[in-house]
Image 1 (cartoon, one colour):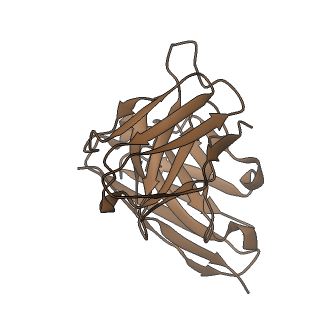
Image 2 (cartoon, helix red, strand yellow):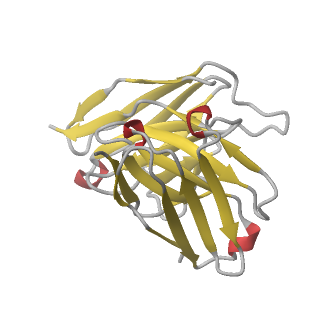
Image 3 (spheres, one colour):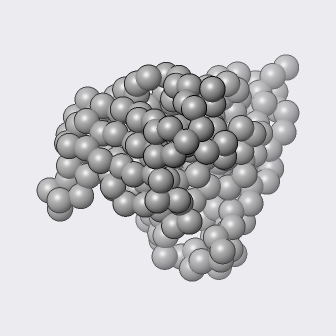
Length: 113
Length: 112
Protein backbone atom coordinates (compact mmCIF):
# COMPACT_ATOMS: atom_id res chain seq x y z
CA UNK A 1 0.00 0.00 0.00
CA UNK A 2 1.31 3.41 -0.98
CA UNK A 3 1.90 5.64 2.04
CA UNK A 4 3.00 9.27 2.03
CA UNK A 5 3.53 10.86 5.42
CA UNK A 6 4.30 14.57 5.65
CA UNK A 7 6.02 16.25 8.57
CA UNK A 8 7.59 19.58 9.46
CA UNK A 9 4.59 21.90 9.37
CA UNK A 10 3.59 24.45 11.99
CA UNK A 11 3.51 28.17 12.71
CA UNK A 12 6.24 30.38 11.24
CA UNK A 13 6.74 34.14 11.06
CA UNK A 14 6.66 35.98 7.75
CA UNK A 15 10.07 36.05 6.10
CA UNK A 16 11.29 32.95 7.89
CA UNK A 17 11.94 29.45 6.55
CA UNK A 18 10.44 26.01 7.00
CA UNK A 19 11.22 22.59 5.54
CA UNK A 20 8.62 19.93 4.90
CA UNK A 21 9.45 16.26 4.56
CA UNK A 22 7.45 13.40 3.09
CA UNK A 23 8.35 9.83 3.93
CA UNK A 24 7.24 7.43 1.21
CA UNK A 25 6.65 3.71 1.45
CA UNK A 26 4.84 0.91 -0.34
CA UNK A 27 6.39 1.58 -3.74
CA UNK A 28 9.78 2.06 -5.40
CA UNK A 29 10.24 5.74 -4.65
CA UNK A 30 13.11 6.23 -7.09
CA UNK A 31 10.88 5.26 -10.04
CA UNK A 32 8.34 8.07 -9.65
CA UNK A 33 8.06 11.78 -10.12
CA UNK A 34 6.72 13.52 -7.02
CA UNK A 35 4.93 16.77 -6.42
CA UNK A 36 3.66 19.13 -3.73
CA UNK A 37 0.15 20.54 -3.88
CA UNK A 38 -1.25 23.02 -1.38
CA UNK A 39 -4.68 24.09 -0.25
CA UNK A 40 -5.26 27.38 1.54
CA UNK A 41 -7.96 27.33 4.24
CA UNK A 42 -11.40 26.89 2.64
CA UNK A 43 -9.85 27.19 -0.84
CA UNK A 44 -9.17 24.84 -3.74
CA UNK A 45 -6.12 22.90 -4.83
CA UNK A 46 -2.97 24.61 -6.09
CA UNK A 47 0.01 22.80 -7.57
CA UNK A 48 3.29 24.01 -6.07
CA UNK A 49 6.22 22.03 -7.47
CA UNK A 50 7.22 18.83 -9.22
CA UNK A 51 10.45 16.84 -9.27
CA UNK A 52 11.41 14.08 -11.67
CA UNK A 53 12.11 10.53 -10.53
CA UNK A 54 15.85 11.14 -10.33
CA UNK A 55 15.76 14.75 -9.18
CA UNK A 56 17.29 16.05 -12.39
CA UNK A 57 14.29 18.19 -13.31
CA UNK A 58 12.20 20.49 -11.15
CA UNK A 59 9.26 22.76 -11.89
CA UNK A 60 7.62 25.47 -9.78
CA UNK A 61 4.60 27.70 -9.91
CA UNK A 62 5.57 31.30 -10.50
CA UNK A 63 4.57 32.54 -7.05
CA UNK A 64 7.10 30.27 -5.29
CA UNK A 65 9.99 30.36 -7.80
CA UNK A 66 13.17 31.51 -6.13
CA UNK A 67 11.70 30.94 -2.65
CA UNK A 68 10.81 27.22 -2.58
CA UNK A 69 13.04 24.27 -3.43
CA UNK A 70 11.78 20.76 -4.04
CA UNK A 71 14.29 17.95 -3.58
CA UNK A 72 14.45 14.25 -2.88
CA UNK A 73 16.65 11.61 -1.31
CA UNK A 74 15.96 8.35 -3.11
CA UNK A 75 18.11 6.38 -0.67
CA UNK A 76 15.79 7.50 2.12
CA UNK A 77 12.58 7.47 0.05
CA UNK A 78 11.93 11.00 1.18
CA UNK A 79 10.67 14.11 -0.58
CA UNK A 80 11.37 17.62 0.69
CA UNK A 81 10.09 21.14 0.26
CA UNK A 82 12.35 23.91 1.52
CA UNK A 83 10.33 27.09 1.88
CA UNK A 84 12.14 30.40 2.35
CA UNK A 85 10.93 33.99 2.64
CA UNK A 86 7.51 32.76 3.64
CA UNK A 87 4.50 35.01 3.17
CA UNK A 88 1.03 35.01 4.68
CA UNK A 89 -0.35 33.80 1.34
CA UNK A 90 1.73 30.61 1.71
CA UNK A 91 -0.52 29.56 4.60
CA UNK A 92 -2.02 26.24 3.54
CA UNK A 93 -2.09 22.51 3.97
CA UNK A 94 0.72 21.06 1.88
CA UNK A 95 0.15 17.65 0.33
CA UNK A 96 2.90 15.34 -0.83
CA UNK A 97 1.77 13.45 -3.92
CA UNK A 98 3.05 10.67 -6.11
CA UNK A 99 2.55 12.27 -9.46
CA UNK A 100 -0.72 13.85 -8.28
CA UNK A 101 -2.20 10.36 -8.16
CA UNK A 102 -1.67 9.29 -4.54
CA UNK A 103 -1.79 11.91 -1.77
CA UNK A 104 -0.52 12.15 1.77
CA UNK A 105 -2.59 13.37 4.69
CA UNK A 106 -1.10 16.85 4.48
CA UNK A 107 1.03 19.16 6.64
CA UNK A 108 -0.40 22.45 7.88
CA UNK A 109 1.75 25.56 7.46
CA UNK A 110 0.66 28.84 9.00
CA UNK A 111 2.61 32.00 8.24
CA UNK A 112 1.76 34.66 10.77
CA UNK A 113 3.40 37.04 13.20
CA UNK B 1 -1.95 28.76 -17.74
CA UNK B 2 -4.75 26.33 -18.57
CA UNK B 3 -7.96 27.36 -16.84
CA UNK B 4 -10.28 24.61 -15.63
CA UNK B 5 -13.91 25.67 -15.19
CA UNK B 6 -16.29 23.42 -13.27
CA UNK B 7 -20.08 23.49 -13.13
CA UNK B 8 -22.11 23.50 -11.06
CA UNK B 9 -20.30 24.73 -7.96
CA UNK B 10 -22.68 22.74 -5.81
CA UNK B 11 -25.18 19.96 -6.37
CA UNK B 12 -27.73 18.35 -4.09
CA UNK B 13 -28.63 14.76 -4.92
CA UNK B 14 -31.13 12.26 -3.57
CA UNK B 15 -29.41 9.01 -2.54
CA UNK B 16 -29.79 6.44 -5.29
CA UNK B 17 -30.09 9.09 -8.00
CA UNK B 18 -27.32 10.03 -10.42
CA UNK B 19 -25.22 13.20 -10.61
CA UNK B 20 -23.07 14.78 -13.29
CA UNK B 21 -20.31 17.34 -12.93
CA UNK B 22 -18.88 19.24 -15.87
CA UNK B 23 -15.40 20.57 -16.40
CA UNK B 24 -14.13 22.66 -19.28
CA UNK B 25 -10.51 23.44 -20.08
CA UNK B 26 -9.27 26.59 -21.82
CA UNK B 27 -7.01 24.47 -24.03
CA UNK B 28 -7.19 21.00 -25.49
CA UNK B 29 -5.94 18.38 -23.03
CA UNK B 30 -5.42 15.82 -25.78
CA UNK B 31 -1.73 15.04 -26.12
CA UNK B 32 -0.19 13.92 -29.40
CA UNK B 33 0.21 10.48 -27.80
CA UNK B 34 -3.58 10.11 -27.82
CA UNK B 35 -3.99 10.50 -24.06
CA UNK B 36 -6.27 13.16 -22.62
CA UNK B 37 -4.74 14.44 -19.41
CA UNK B 38 -7.77 15.26 -17.31
CA UNK B 39 -8.17 13.83 -13.83
CA UNK B 40 -10.97 13.78 -11.26
CA UNK B 41 -10.53 13.85 -7.49
CA UNK B 42 -12.84 13.66 -4.50
CA UNK B 43 -12.00 15.38 -1.24
CA UNK B 44 -14.19 14.01 1.51
CA UNK B 45 -14.79 16.25 4.54
CA UNK B 46 -11.62 16.60 6.60
CA UNK B 47 -9.62 14.31 4.31
CA UNK B 48 -6.99 14.67 1.62
CA UNK B 49 -8.01 14.42 -2.04
CA UNK B 50 -8.26 10.96 -3.58
CA UNK B 51 -8.00 10.08 -7.23
CA UNK B 52 -11.20 8.86 -8.89
CA UNK B 53 -10.54 9.01 -12.63
CA UNK B 54 -7.27 9.36 -14.52
CA UNK B 55 -6.65 10.20 -18.18
CA UNK B 56 -10.28 11.20 -18.67
CA UNK B 57 -11.99 7.84 -18.42
CA UNK B 58 -9.91 5.37 -16.42
CA UNK B 59 -11.19 4.31 -13.02
CA UNK B 60 -8.59 4.50 -10.27
CA UNK B 61 -7.91 1.41 -8.18
CA UNK B 62 -10.51 0.77 -5.50
CA UNK B 63 -13.00 3.30 -6.88
CA UNK B 64 -16.54 1.96 -7.31
CA UNK B 65 -17.72 1.53 -10.89
CA UNK B 66 -20.60 3.91 -10.09
CA UNK B 67 -18.07 6.58 -11.10
CA UNK B 68 -17.27 7.21 -14.74
CA UNK B 69 -15.48 9.85 -16.74
CA UNK B 70 -15.96 10.95 -20.31
CA UNK B 71 -15.39 13.88 -22.62
CA UNK B 72 -13.71 15.40 -25.60
CA UNK B 73 -10.59 17.54 -25.90
CA UNK B 74 -11.89 20.41 -23.79
CA UNK B 75 -15.19 19.32 -22.26
CA UNK B 76 -15.35 16.63 -19.62
CA UNK B 77 -17.95 14.98 -17.43
CA UNK B 78 -17.83 13.00 -14.22
CA UNK B 79 -20.93 10.90 -13.69
CA UNK B 80 -21.90 9.28 -10.44
CA UNK B 81 -24.63 6.66 -10.70
CA UNK B 82 -26.65 5.68 -7.64
CA UNK B 83 -25.18 8.31 -5.31
CA UNK B 84 -24.41 7.07 -1.82
CA UNK B 85 -23.75 8.86 1.48
CA UNK B 86 -20.00 8.16 1.16
CA UNK B 87 -19.89 10.21 -2.06
CA UNK B 88 -20.38 13.49 -0.19
CA UNK B 89 -17.52 15.95 -0.58
CA UNK B 90 -15.88 18.29 -3.06
CA UNK B 91 -15.04 17.07 -6.54
CA UNK B 92 -12.16 18.61 -8.46
CA UNK B 93 -11.09 18.22 -12.05
CA UNK B 94 -7.45 18.82 -12.85
CA UNK B 95 -5.18 18.93 -15.86
CA UNK B 96 -1.78 17.24 -15.90
CA UNK B 97 -0.96 18.04 -19.49
CA UNK B 98 1.47 20.86 -18.80
CA UNK B 99 2.98 22.96 -16.05
CA UNK B 100 1.58 24.64 -14.13
CA UNK B 101 -0.87 21.86 -13.39
CA UNK B 102 -4.22 23.45 -12.62
CA UNK B 103 -7.50 22.46 -11.00
CA UNK B 104 -11.09 23.52 -11.20
CA UNK B 105 -12.65 25.41 -8.30
CA UNK B 106 -14.46 22.33 -7.09
CA UNK B 107 -18.05 21.09 -6.98
CA UNK B 108 -19.61 20.38 -3.61
CA UNK B 109 -21.91 17.37 -3.60
CA UNK B 110 -24.47 17.14 -0.83
CA UNK B 111 -27.34 14.77 -0.18
CA UNK B 112 -30.97 15.86 -0.15
